[in-house]
Length: 416
Length: 117
Image (cartoon, rainbow over all chains, first blue to last red; front, side, top):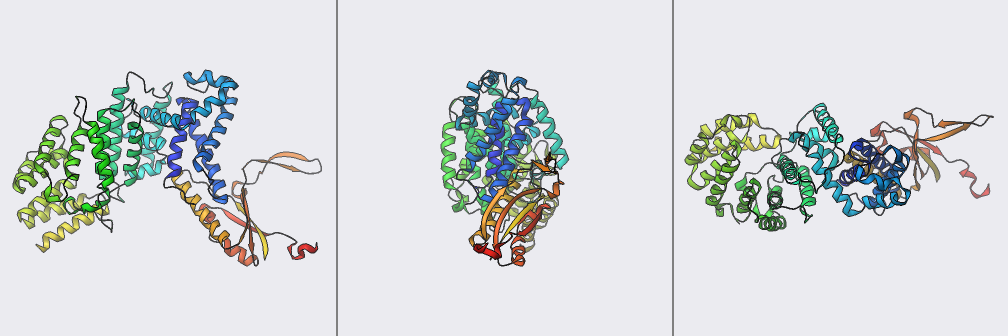
């Protein structure tokens, strides 16, 4: 029997969240230790004896028994959150309370509370994401450092500091709290950034960190599964993730090279994810608030509903980018808008739009800025100019996939 | 055929859940392969790192195993091999060596006498 992919990591996140709910957020380090201990026991036993029938239940039971030991021993130390303490003080209620905390519903509830706690307003977005990956997704510090092209020491410092702030709270975030709407915005933003990091990935090893996208989607699913918590903007972000994830497999070809959007094999798009994404997008169309998630999901939907690249409704895409620029202007969005305009009105118009981008200097280290200039010049037949732009892009490339992709564009310029 | 015990000693456990999973899968694959070939008598058990040592005429009880970390037995398996050379050969693919651990191979005594004992 094989272990399901990332099984340990995911169970780690579930158990840490559950134990933190029982021990109180101040004792998050204890929750992590107990989880680590349960995993060491699992590993030592399973590696010799093979997997138990239900590995997840095995881990949960091991962690649960350890939790009971600790709670009995530390009862007077009031390790727990105030709301649970009184149930944990008496032996009569201790066992049922701990059992309840490990029930499927309560585990999900704890994961959600933890997710909202990780998006503490005193933490930067980077720290929130690192904390989510570490605590909820079971990523080790070095794996996070790797994904974000950061040093081990820097990520470790960020996580240690973030945990300290988290541990200062008296309890995990209460989903019925009046702050829920504002905290939800932070959670969605963190999941959005996490997904984008996977999708556009600056990791030096691979251009697409599928793992990060999958983690973001798993956490997003936790959120939209709860009827009491779900909002139109959550549906919109989920739609965006599904519609983009549907196209992930075609961003790299069989040899792991980046494929230009226009050359992607649309028959390889995941049509199940597209249908799910479309359904989510429909669900997001209520309420009065139009968020960037709605518009970005609508753009993704316009792309996925075109059977061939040349069938794309560029007019609609341009107008969606206009809306996006109105509520959430950024140089990258402006660049994407210019690309859409070039598709609609030709490369000259696209280049004009790029020249007037506000804050253009903020794109100076973004390889797809010169790459776009190169692409548009190439279409105009200005091969030497295009080649220069692609060479600039090549010097900014962040991973071998980007480098190969740009090298092939340079070769195209030479051949033409 | 003779039975041998593998004592697994002094290996480090990975800290990351993902690495734990990879490592567990490697061990499982190694033992499964040996088992499928009929060379495993008992998959064995892990041993917890705590315990007591009782020694001397005074039967002094002390916290053990009190060996250095690299010498602590973390588990055992019982395998079946033609001779000790083959038992050693079977051990070579064990993932323990990637983690600084060692295997001690010991023939289980008296088997030559078989049922005549």
